[in-house]
Image (cartoon, rainbow, N blue to C red; front, side):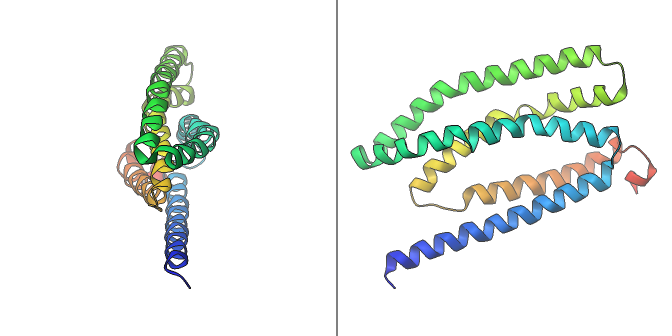
Length: 189
């Protein structure tokens, strides 16, 4: 086995291991969230609010945008080296960031309007949590774009480590703040 093959297997094992850690911490995050909030209106509101930025992460950060930029970044790396690839990445970020920030502000504005018109506690919670969750969207989309660039540089596993850290932070956050938002004494137990 050549050194290149050993390096590739090591990178594959690192990515697979951190992906497994990320999935396990994601499962624990979902279990803690469900245990804390249950199937009540707070749990439904949290799931709804978190799904909106997550949808954009899937579409932009880890979906179409990354799939479209990785081949171009690879070609730029072959043509002009890393400086050319990072110049292209900088160009993409300069074009993408204003749109993401505008979309985030629009979503927050819609959520504020929804909050003002909310007639029940469930809608009020969903609107408030959406306002709190939306700033996650541009950050995670930019992080996903940077991850593709870092992968092209031969550094693997960073996205999975970041995902695990997010899951751990959410577990701690739900554990800390969930007590105050829980629907009942059972959720607070």
